Amino acid sequence: MKVVYCEQMVADAQSFSPSARKPREVVGSWRRRFPVLSMVEPQPVSVDQLCLAHDPGYVRGVLSLRLANGFGNHLPEVAQSLPWTSGAMLGAARWALNEGCAVAPVAGFHHACYGHGGGYCTFNGLMVAALVLHREGLVRRVGILDFDQHYGNGTSDIIRELGLHWVEHYSAGAWWERPEQAERFLDEIPQILARFADCDLLLYQAGADPHVNDPLGGWLTTAQLRARDRLVFAATRAMGLPLAWNLAGGYQTNLRKVLDIHDNTMLECLNAFAERIDEIV
Image (cartoon, rainbow, N blue to C red; front, side):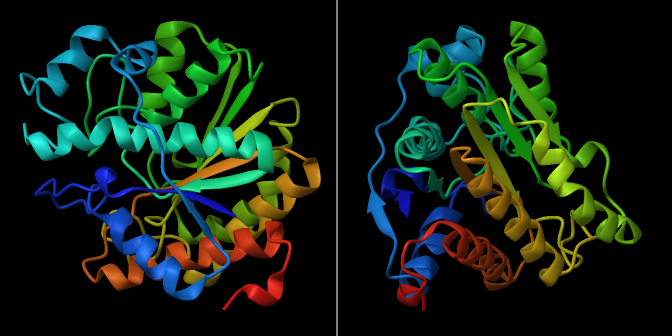
């Protein structure tokens, strides 16, 4: 299993959200638990590639520190990390097309709209990856399965702004939010995934913030989150649908609790895709 990671992806955004600094902690936890993982370094995306999904003035304004990033500040450390985080998502998508599944341990994508950021998201690496691969002729249709707690308004905005009818987008935050919906949500995941059957690639946001104890979430238990991921990975493996996934959300102040959720996601991924399950610790 390929994990697309490098230290350039990590920044301290001085924010309530840990997303900019979380990759290092997540990868450290994965390395200790899952020696079967293979770490590969991404390439940063170019300004031109970011401009496929975003207004060029916005892209250049953020990178030059003239405009605020999605955390609402102008920190150079954040600006320097942004081409690498989207580059990791693009790299994971490329690996998935070749090997079936890969992960970019990054977050901070789906609230980034065409011309502005917000909600701790600056550039929409999901849409950047989809647009780069589509332009290169490597994919005809791309699916985006967003199981974060919150609606992916930025993804929808870019799809609408650019008229991207070849992108199939499903954001659970538009439909699911209450504990009494949890079991029905799990029951409907196979049906949700069926809408991506004609896609060449699926980008999956495995959000940690729907957890019942998350201050910005609150409707799925740890076991239900793990069942969610098990269903997604098993179904995509059975469909033969290449899958690149990333992290999303997770705001519990004890970061170890968030890392445990991401560990469970990786474990379910390996259960579905690893060739030798006995290598998993």
